[in-house]
Every structure is written in C-alpha cells, then in structure tokens.
Length: 276
Image (cartoon, rainbow, N blue to C red; front, side, top):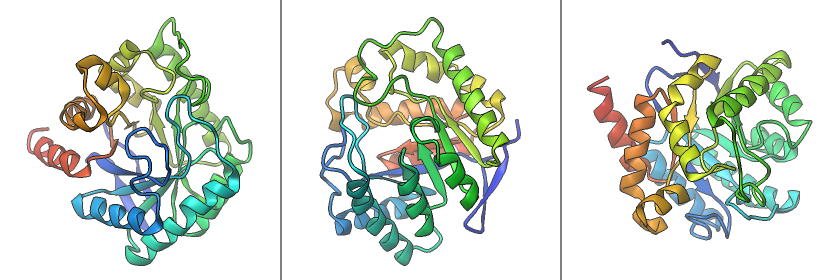
C-alpha cells in the first residue's frame, strides 16, 4: 500500500519508510520520565540527543496523560512547552516538532514558534477550536482514540469489539477533520488510553486494518503498563519488550513509532528496511 506524503515546514515527509517520534515530556509527573527533563536546558539536551539518535520528530508535552493524572492550567502548560520548542528550533531549524496537547491555545503558540504537528490525545474532542487552529496553520494533526479522559480512562474500560469501536472513532474524526480543511492527518489507536491489557494486544495484532482509513498510523506503546503487567517488569526494564512490540507494529503497517528509546527504535527500523 502506498502512503501519502506531507509537506511540513517546507520538508516533504514520505511515509514509505517508518518514522520515529521521540517523546519529550516536560512534566514533573509523566509515568516514565516525569521530572527528568523538567528544566528547559535538560529538555533541550535530551531532544538533541534523540535527534542525533535518529528521531524524525520530537513530541513535546507539558501535561501528563498517565492514568489518573490531573489536568494542568493553560499557563502552566505554556510555560513548560513554549520555551523548550523555541530553543530546540533555534538549535536545529530543520527538526519537526509535534505539540502534545488538547488545548487549542497551546497548539497555536507552539505552531507560532515552529511546531508543525498537533498531537491531540482527545482526537479533536476536548477543544472545539483545535480544528480551526490546525486549519489556520496548515498543521498536521494526530487523531488519537481514548475512552474517557486521563483521570478516568483506566477505571474498568470495556469494549464489545475494541478494533471496531476504535476504528469507527478514528474514521469518523478523520472525516470530520478533512471536511473542515485539514488534509494532513495521522491516526493513533491510543494504546493504553482506556484499554484493558488484552485490548492493547488485539489492537497491535490488527493494526494493519487501520491503514484502510487512508492515513498513516502512529503507535505509542513505549514502556506502557500493559507491558509491565504482562512480563512483571518495572518501567526502566521495559526497553527490550518495547522494541519487540514496536517491531511487530511496523510489520503491521505502523508508519510512526512514538518512543522513549529512539536509539533502539532507529536500529530496528534500519534492520527492517533490509528485509521488508
């Protein structure tokens, strides 16, 4: 299957080869790396390392979305993310930056300062103005599926058919975005966001079905709790298991891998390119 290419900040991004998105959480409380890159200098230093390790995109987030997390104010999120984006862009002008937010004002200011992708975990449902901002800036939009919100999403989620229900949501929201003038769309089934352990494995196993929606599929499973619970591993022990599932995801047609360990992921992508 051929994949669309998107022009982002003057760069033509082709998804025939999988792309890597490095996770940069500028928060004190994210599940894996909360507090590690909380200062601007630490965050920028880590971003530069991920770029050197092979990241195609850096995804900057200023609000934790781990299960049970509380929302933060607009000002807090802006103060965490915008200075980091500015500094990364001043040092690496060609790097593509994604802003991980559900707030249209955060997205707007991030785009003003060099971001070109909006990563909205609500799938464009939390903020009615997000579509308008994306259209105004001709930004790419990542539409993710989540049941509930981060505070409540893991409180006994249930699906009759998880693939069908997630597919239906992503298809519907993609059509809505396209009809409102957004033509650079990426879809994400939302591993770990309101999903039971087995739901996550089912979604990964059926990932190739989502490409029939017509847009590149992103997967974000790095170090998540379903891996730890399945293998009885602490967060800092999950790198190998993560890259195994990321490999399966690429074989199942994922076009973007959102990950903490860019170096491992890049090695995987390079090896697979010799085979598939």
